[in-house]
Image 1: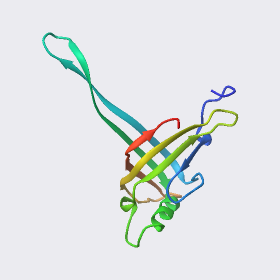
Image 2 (image 1 turned 120 degrees about the vertical axis):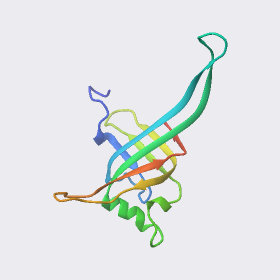
Image 3 (image 1 turned 90 degrees about the horizontal axis):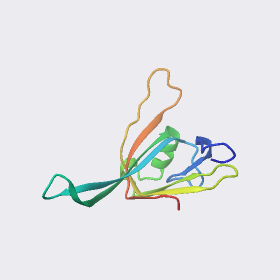
Length: 139
């Protein structure tokens, strides 16, 4: 908390492929990290030790159509977001007068996206599900 305020959407800056400055066309972004933890059982009813398993980072981003078109423009004709080389997304939480928090989503690849509009829409937003190689928090 900074002077009574929590981090807010307006405090967040996101840098994606096709931009070297924070991208204004990001509508939403979510990312998480999961790690498998298991209890190991043998004789008796209680676990006798613990095991560790895979780590799985995942993410999704919602972009304005203009931002998606800018990203696609950097690809060969006929290619789409799923053909992009792995890329990094940088997310910076930077409140006025507060402490910067910077996370890096590494080796991102777009797994799927969908374009579409309906009556009454004033703009198009495109949800992109991402495969992520790693997430580095608070760099």
